[in-house]
Length: 266
Image (tube, rainbow, N blue to C red; front, top):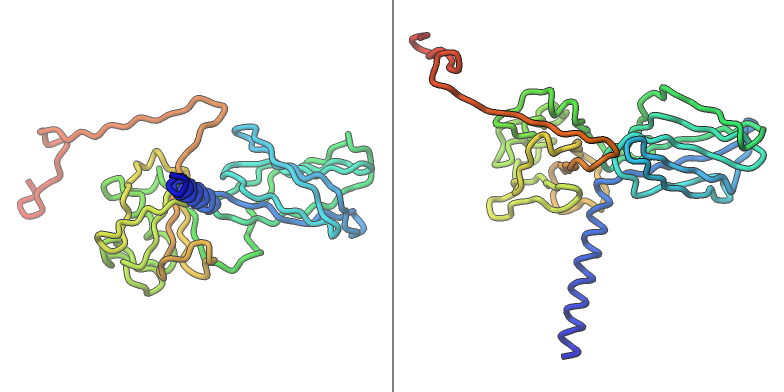
């Protein structure tokens, strides 16, 4: 009996651990260094990321080298602040965190009262400089704007560099690999159909997807499994505002809903 309980506990522990590891893949990270205006690193600075849509806050403190790292950040738009006694608080607004991204944001604090605040707005899009992986992010706006065959968001893989359509069940070869070599995930969790080579099992409607990232090359060991591309779709989550969508599909019998015959043009 004790052995059975121990076995069940071990299985449950492995299941929880696998979920926690999977969730990292659809989250992001803020990294950077905090210095004063003379270039001296500042330890003990409180760096806080605030989600604009949900109000969620996550904080950390810089180390002896003035460096910080904020991990497990859900995708969304953030305001990032750095504060330390004897210096003005600096806030950088409108930082967009995408799935699996690692964004480097540095601060240069000015001497003054901590109650005083320096706000930086209209920050230009951040480019990842801490990793060498080649990836493309298809955002919600692109998912809802670009044409899709049968409302299949995976058809938008064609917009990523290095993809070739018409390869295998997945439909696309990435960087010369077979179409069956791709790895599909939803929120960092395995979504592969192992019965028919590599194909997605669960097909989400476009309205349910916040964005998806296609990693074509140099992806880290946390993904593994396949030698082709990694496609990770992130589902939408709630915010502080009510929102929703609706759509309808109708094909009537009148000529208004039908295309002309390709041969007779009738």
